[in-house]
Every structure is written in structure tokens, then in C-alpha cells.
Image (cartoon, rainbow, N blue to C red; front, side):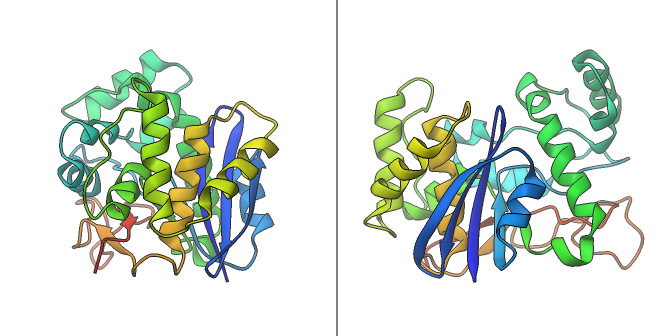
Length: 253
């Protein structure tokens, strides 16, 4: 079985894989479908992209609220409100912002709009074959995963404000479950021929290790399923298209 962590980067996706408890490789992929095709035996694929979107209901996703509470301040600010599904068809930020403000009590941040194409790509990928893909491909947030690796303590250093300290702090967290991870991080980083950063590589490792048997059994934020009020009766813990609204992490037992 393979356990895969995937993080978006400007040119596509960075993926890292563990086979059981052993690092087996990683690299750059232009499309999310390319990741899927490269790991056909994947037991779990954790991706840092919102899965399960509000549609016709503007309330916040419970998983985002729970993740912010778990991380506290200031790291909780890294969990930003995702766009509602209707905004994914917009061609310009102004149009998407108008839709978001009409559908919710908030607005659409530039950070969320910057990854709208990634959200749309994963959303369309999952809906194209939900029976095969939903439940294998699941949402996770790197900072939540790092905090879980640190015993529930969020990282202290900002990736943008204190990049060197942030890098080593997150490597230290990964080393709690894989003592040889720095070698693997360097191997993947040196192999990438794209605009990916060290942060993208570390985030992919955090997700892959969370999915793997090296960490405790995974659970979700929120602990109870989140259900969109607009779904049909009998559909639980999903958005109107049947996609779960949850974040996977592996807290200490």
C-alpha cells in the first residue's frame, strides 16, 4: 500500500509517497490526475486543497472552524475560508468576490482565489469517478498535521516571516516519526524542475507521513460529520455533490 501527500505549487503539484513505513519517492506533477495515475495502489492520498464546498448555503465549513481552534493564534490564520462552489466558474477575482459576498456573510480573500484553479481541478477530478476516488483522496491541512506531530502544539515560526527557523522547526516535527526524513526532503527538493518551494515539499511530507502507518490512526476535524443544510435527506457528512467536508489528521493517542 502507498500513502501519498500532495501540495499545490505554482506549476502543478508536489507529491510524496511512503510505501508502508518507508519513503519511496516523490516529484512534480502537472495535473492531479497525474498523481493519481502514478500511485494506482494508493491507500490514502491527502491533499492540501479544500474538498467539499458550500453550495447554496453560506455558513462556514465546520472543518475550517475546528482547524482554526486546534491551531490557535496566530497559526490558525493559515486556515482561510474556501470559496463556495459557484465562484469556481468565475473568470476574474472581482466576479468571484461578488458571488462569495452574495452567498456568504464574508468575502473571498486573494489567497483563496489564488488556489481556485487547484480547488476546481480536484473537485472535478473527484466528481468524475466518486466511487473510485472519494474516500481515498481526502483533505488535510499541513499546519494541522505539523501540530499533531508536535503533540498538539502549533508551529511557532512563520514560513514567510522567519523562513529558516520555520523550515527547521517543521523538519524537527517530521523527524519525530521519520528520523531520516531530511535526506528524503533534500532528495525530492533537488529533483524538482518547477517553481515549487521548500515549504511545498515539507507540506507534502507532512501529509504523506500523516497518511502512513508511521503516525497514529487518523481521525478528522470536526470529530462529528459536517452536513450542508442543502443536501438531500439521508446524505450525511457531505456537500450537495457528495464530497465530505472534513480535514484528516493524526493526533497523539
